[in-house]
Length: 116
Length: 138
Image 1 (cartoon, rainbow over the protein chains, first blue to last red):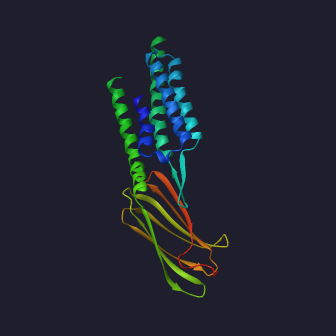
Image 2 (cartoon, helix red, strand yellow; image 1 turned 180 degrees about the vertical axis):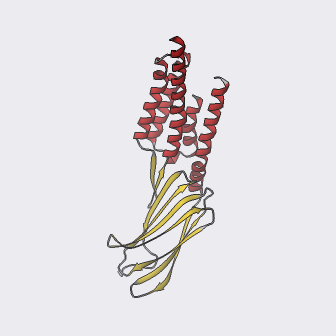
Image 3 (cartoon, each protein chain N blue to C red; image 1 turned 30 degrees about the horizontal axis):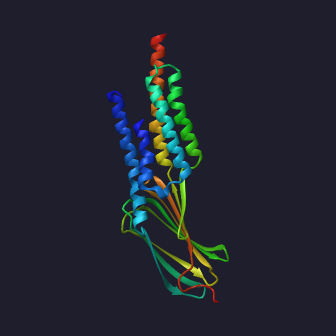
């Protein structure tokens, strides 16, 4: 969960002028939401309910952030500059949403097998 | 967090840092210096217009890949001439040279530069300018 905080903090510290505020606010908002739901999920037993608590806020967060745009357009002295940041967002999506979701699903499935 | 979880977290963090490094370096370069230097000079004057040579030199630290430089000469808002040059990789100190004709009735020149920062992040920059010392009378 701590890793989830790294991306916006690095970007805000090093390159604040290149990040649009609505996207950054959303990233920070869902970082907080994910931290809370992740903490709740960590104390839950591996039931079918657990992946919903931990994963759905992250997936929704990413979809919302991606829908606001993953690129930056700025104008510097008459030169328009466009920068596409989607590779890092897709990497974060893979590492912090898809991989954990898969692990949660395996854990839930194992629990379900043991129970039945 | 167990040891495999910790290992996964460290590997994830490493991947994120690796993927972010070129972007952060490029952003730092962009804010501290002029990373794309453009120099141009008239090569010859003919009845059709002036042949101009343009040199674009890259001064950034991060290599650029899939580089495309396009020059469009605009006559009354419409493209009347265009030239482009491409390069697989552009590293620090390397240049791209392009020659193009500026017709007598040209109003401005649009320079479009497109590349990928370290093969990851697409960068597009477009500027429109008059050719120095050249333009319609008046």
